[in-house]
Length: 235
Length: 75
Image 1 (cartoon, rainbow over the protein chains, first blue to last red):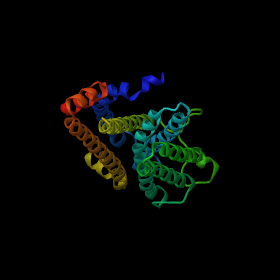
Image 2 (tube, each protein chain N blue to C red):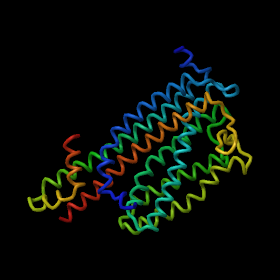
Image 3 (cartoon, one colour):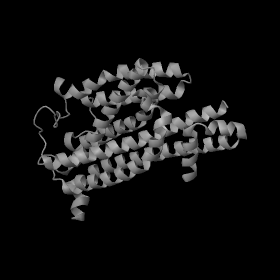
Image 4 (spheres, rainbow over the protein chains, first blue to last red):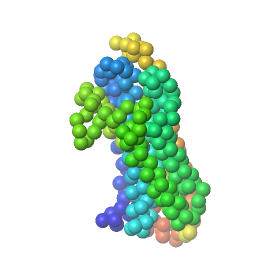
């Protein structure tokens, strides 16, 4: 099973996939933008400011999802002694970081008309900022350490410490009295959001997921070529 | 309809700046990633070009190297 994930085998797919993913992303994003900006209704309380949700929420979901995946892959890299897991983690991190920044900035923009402030040291917002710092530390670790073994250990350590923050982000709105509203979408219980807003939200989430897949594929291919470049030096 | 979209009950400046920031971040990340990819691809082609016949044949025995070269010439 793990052999199927060997870079030499999957490069055939990963090298061709970006152009199709890009095309699909443009289609899904165009539909999502029309839904989010034109077709979806305004909120009875927040009016049109609610439309910021269509970029803020998917960005937050995906940045959390990517960080969790990075942690899982890094730990698996150690368990299965598979370098490819680290390579996949490294390729996922840039899009996770950018989605984290988008969630913070769009959240701040949304905060001004709804709370009357651009920023508050509220549990949810602060824990999202801490996640961005973990992403940054992870990316810096890959830049500053040349030794493979060292960077595997340090980056995994960063993700293990950082993953503690993920449930804090998720439950911060329940554990503490925060400015941030509680979750409107829950798998276990009935959603407090109407389907006319839920569908655009899912379409935008799909578009964002496709974008992170696109960046991941491009970054992964770049990393593989980098390795092969080093291989040519050794000939 | 267009004026409604542009005004958004007075929230357009917030909504459109949030969407613009998102799309510009996407564009920025895409371009940076693409530039890095093309740079590595070009480096690979240049290194491959400097190999002698024997080294080139050894390198070509790996399918992935052939694939990288094929993609670089297609782009």
